[in-house]
Length: 453
Image (tube, rainbow, N blue to C red; front, side):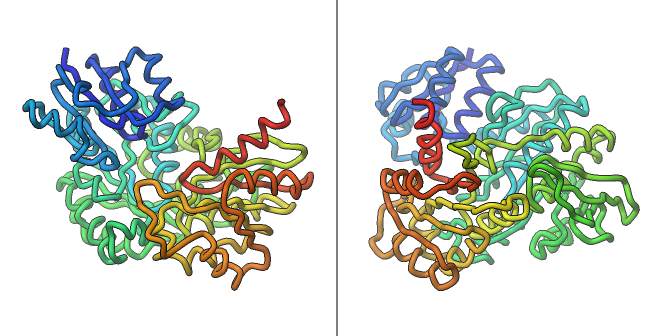
């Protein structure tokens, strides 16, 4: 039995890979710098995990897998190299697994890739194709972020950060959109576009590429690829399109569905927002191309209730609906708040935690204009993640810029202050969205817990 050791096993990618290889009969161990609910779930599977990084942890391993967040200067990675144990970054191992399974389906894009991956996976599962699945977020229908199937199909969320998806080996690709993000590794939009072009170049001649046609950069890549291409979007000349968007009670959205301009019935979703129609169209495009019947695809999408942290309704606090959302780029913030405004008639509070100093600095003006559909914006301090504070950008700076476009922006900083402010000022009938890729969700959880105590 081969032994794989994962350094940084609590992260979404390595956690999912650990489960997938554990299901395939490998002996798995791992380490991380702190304990978590996710790590405890791995322990329940019989996976041995150490808290803290020590050279001793890698002894006996046949392969040591690490994340970009950990880096190759980690003491465990260095010890593996000293002992002659092969090392591999997580994306590279995921690419290898795609090859082992057979037919890799990679879902990429600056926004929407997690939900599109989840929707595509459910369409293929309900269509009887029994795929292996790897998602960046948690999907309740899967009981986590992975599924081990027995067919050649493997659906994978493909992230462009540090060009990690260039280590994949897909046969099918879907691109939701291309926008400038991760300024810490992409100096400009042109660099992002080039990286996605390199991603498309991974496809074999007999592969397939599906793109959101209303995104000019994605559409250009479809012209760049010489193999089979499919388009989906809002225009009738795309392969799959929608028109006549309308709300569906209580929070959903629907539209007339067309294939090559011809009506095919209604696409109806429980989840809100135009962006989710886009995600669903992508899933439907892939699913039907692989043989899933249209009625099955539509029924599956109609029953889809979302991915954790993607407009996840957490509960109700004293007559206030509490939602958590992962949006951390200006475009995603706008889309999420637009969806909320279309579905909700009361006051909308957005408690936003910027993610990364670099993203906040380089996209400051875009962020400042992104909150128009919220009635009240509350800003937490920046979540540093992998970065060190450069001392030249802060949430106070974002608040000052956002006040040029919004009448009620409140910079409050720490979670205790935000919690107290929300308790004093929220009113029955309000909607609170905790928003960001960090840990702002804790504020909403704390409010909900307070009524249980």
